[in-house]
Image (cartoon, rainbow, N blue to C red; front, top):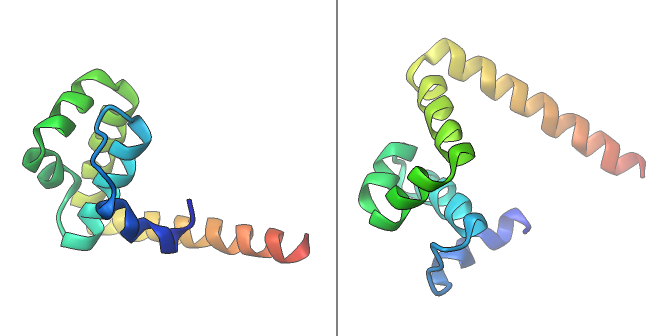
Length: 95
């Protein structure tokens, strides 16, 4: 899914039985509404159930909260993300 298509996610019929939908919905909603991952999950009972069922998603949420809580760690994470995006862009431009 291309980033420009993410807004259309909220126009779709909700499908919280799909792990992919749960991940995208949580991340995009947190970004769009300027909320934490925990706040988004607290708003949607289906996501609360998904967190209990999917250990990987639970681990992501826990790690996200850890990173988001500390400004220094958050800054380091954003630098790491920017480096990865820069490398991906260089790789794509070279191919």
